[in-house]
Amino acid sequence: MGTVTRTVCFTDLANYTQKVSRSDREGLRRILEEHEQLVRPIVEKYGGRIVKNLGDSFLILFKSATDALRAALDVQHIVHAEGGTSIRLAMTTGDVEEIEGDAFGEAVNLAARILGKAPAEEIWFGPGTRVCMNAAEIPWEEVGRFSMKGIPDEKVVFRAVPQHKCWLPEAIKLAARNRNLVRLRRGARPPLLPPDPVILFEGFTPGSAALDDAVNSLPVLNPASLWLAAYNIASEDRKAWTENGRGLVIGTPEAVAAAIEEAQNVQTRTTGSDTIVLEVGTNADLELVMCGLALPAVPLSDVVASYFYELLPDGRWVNRADNSVVRAEVSPTGVAIRALTSGISVDNRPLPRGEATNVRDGSIIYAPTVTLRFQEVGAPYAGLVLADTEMRLGVMDGSTATLGREPVHPGLAYPDRRGQENIRWCTGPRAARARAGGFTLDRALAGRRQASIALMGNSITVRQIHERCPTYVFNDGTRALTVLSKTDQEVQAQVGNLIFAGTTVVGVRAPE
Image 1: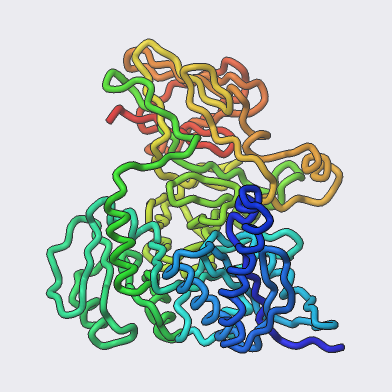
Image 2: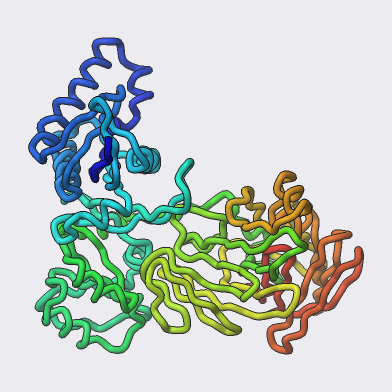
């Protein structure tokens, strides 16, 4: 039997396992009946067919990708209006083999994997659906790139946006909290702009002359600071707006306004467990600031052929994450920056989502929540990607601080990023042994106790502790690089120097 092109959709009850544990058999039966009573009429309305019931989920086939998404949006609209059981939906479009009423094929497998990534009350879909759907009928946005078990290569995943919901990009949330978000509505005169404004155009028809006039009325700004609020937008208008690095906020006017109000009401900032508290407050005479990612050159010791790290919106570098904004890719030809979200530019050139460009000494990488600088330092490093973070340690005159993955107190702890998904291995037995032994760049190139920094008056002494992993001290002004490779070897540093080992850069700063 041949295959046919279908949109494969899964529905799933959120928190089903938890509800089962708290329900008797009658309650469980009622939950499943409510699920079917909600889903089945909408599926049939849009020409879909429920293939089978998988307990708390349905496998559904649609002939039309657009109809599948319209059905999913209707489901979420009803759930929101009635306050019923929370449902997630996921789909993709591709070849399906239908055998005795059941469905098989790669599209079925991918849709199931996307469902496993989708949060409650959201509609996620794969690239096949994105290509086949009528983009002008469906409000949608990209979620990110995902690695999924059993699926080759990363897959770009998208999200349909219901009328009641708007997921603000990090740049808009941050601007709303910092009070530098300028909401420019159609027909209003351009306001006085604050420093570093983020402009959100609201009420404009995408591709209209009025929108062009509004953009042209503003002073010259980084395209990444210009955002358009829209709900339904045709593909050509979307491309024309975003190809220069400008961003989109997808949502109805009411949903956008509610999301901005919610962001402005956030008074506290959550931080990750990697945050280092400034242990010595106003009495600190020196600050050590985690300020970037050091990138060892490749090939590395016949083990690593190439690798990458990804930047989170809060400025932390990780091996890989679904919400990363940029990726730093290191290969034998140099360092490239790949945009993983909109609003990225390199040396004032917008970088479309998914594309990469090589960087050189002094390159400036602009992301919605952080601006980075690429610094060449010489062998054995391909370079440093620099931006100060909130991870810092105060040092008092007459005291000594330790650097490393597990420093003694007081100390500044290097990130210990687990996992090998960011590494492409060399061939040969040495690489195979390293991979099997759990090799990572962070653990192999920096020690638990790497180096110490002592402050005595105006003297800053960096001393090597680890017997194998070198420590590097770089003077940005003179471009001099000093290597500490022997235990107890030391060098005099100064404010402004960069100290790095493994993949971690620490800046020596005067206290703020």
